[in-house]
Image (cartoon, rainbow, N blue to C red):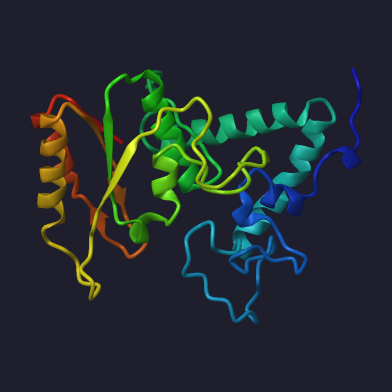
Length: 250
């Protein structure tokens, strides 16, 4: 068996910025497009972490946890490929998460991890589109509440110039061999920022219209949005799923 050396394995800081799209790639100044580094910023930093997970620097406790795990990865890599090490670690996280969610005995449920929330929307849309032959409408809350690139991902278009696997692509271009989906936004707030109490009513109207026209519907339920609201409500989503048979809920 071939023994691998430490030099063959990425550094901890490299691992923390690897496997993502162009948003987390570091520029010459050591910061990504959001002004975040691969290291904790420290108490002296003027940067306040009110952004999304993608737009926030790693915290000191999280970095310390990664540093404690890193020697184990190095040791495992002496006998395994990088991919095998990654697969083993992600399976461990998947098992732990299922246990924490009370799903440890459910072999019919799998957990999918992705480089970002935007990637998860893309994966979910791709999974559905891969087995559906129906014209489909995707209904989501305002992109300002979820992420500005989510509509592109749900439409099965490239949302960054670099994929999570490192491939160079053209932003907004339709993903090759993928079925394009129609995406509409249901605004969650008025122009003055107040919550629109008619959001669920308008969402239901969009679903009924799509259903009557022969479309299947993917409804994106956000819990919670970037500004702390839930759209649509869980009660509305459950009721709609019970009432409309031709309804796909994500």
